[in-house]
Length: 417
Image 1: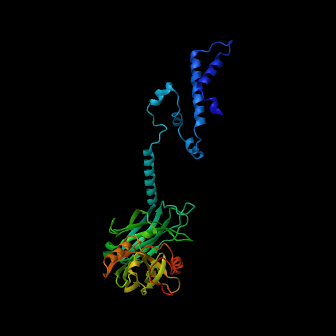
Image 2: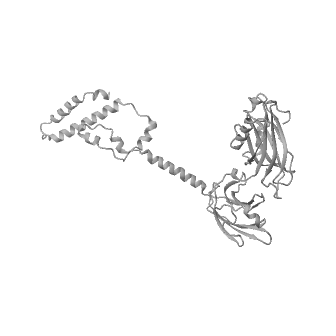
Image 3: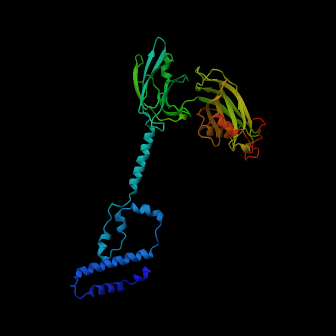
């Protein structure tokens, strides 16, 4: 064993001295050389002792040790009394980890990532009002430095233009594989000059996708149309495209009231009206109706609908929808409200959705809790509509089957939901 050979360093030193004196023909070795040889032998002996007594290091840390600075490795060696001065010196910054530097870089990287997400390019457009025809002309000229949405590093951009609160929409042509499209397309919005102060110009930039839902690149909202001029002559405007998700698109609002009777176990949702709904037909209007589904543990128990209102973006219903729910089941259920566009030929399309319940988000949860806090009292609120993350077909497939032995202590669902 190696440990037995180096157990006694003094015996080894005797062997060294004997080895030095064994030759009588060679000249005497100077004293300083003997001292240096003795120190070298001591350091070698101590290193061998540490190697034989210390446990083997784990292989999973070898990659980390290879990247450590050389100064950190030699600082742990015991070099004897002659090197005590070096050990007592203050360590330099070389080879030391400074957490504040890494923290600062992390913060800078987060800020840069946020800024990069918000950098969606710029758009160039012009405005001019025609007094004779009482119309606002909006010309989409071009966009510059759009972010890449495709795997090939390009996009297929187009622009949707709204003059809010009207939902009449215009759309440019799609430009293939470019981040700097030139549109040069003009659109005419009939509007009286006196009403321009209450209008907002909304432009949404999208990336066309043939096989899936189009990605929203960003949006520009011009709150004040008279910001630069009186629009009597054509005004050229540049605006930064602001980052926005698909949910930030204005789909309209719905107003309804909630009232719960604990003694009867009855929940009444009264659909009052909607406003500024998204136009789904080529005529610039929609045929909206409201569908309300009672959900428990991800399963649909019941669904009820309002009547259909033809050719309108601001329908009025005043229709009550009633669900029988025991008080001990109120924490387990939620309501899924969908504003739909009726289509006689094809499939009905979802205009927007919102959810109510204890596990809902934002105003949907607040309205539900307010209803429970003030029973037997109708409480009405406006709710913004959000884009549905799942298609109506996927929702039906997920909620079509109901297990009567589920954990929801709600009434038995009807035979034909």
